[in-house]
Length: 80
Image 1 (cartoon, rainbow, N blue to C red):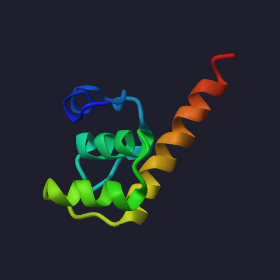
Image 2: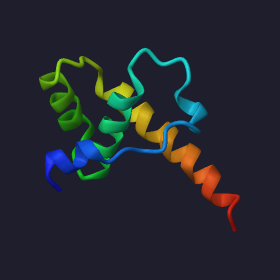
Image 3: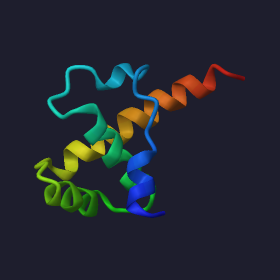
């Protein structure tokens, strides 16, 4: 997937309560989660964000990915 396509896609973040009270802007977190989902490691994702001027630890990115995963997993479970 091209970077331009990756930037155009977004997660549905309006309903994700797991991202309230974060110091990092939601589009940045959504971008990081999508980068990780495309196969980038947490440290590679951290490096890409650093190139864009966003300094966050790979642990922070890990938390974002798993909060979204847990939140989406809960929402999908109720759709049965």
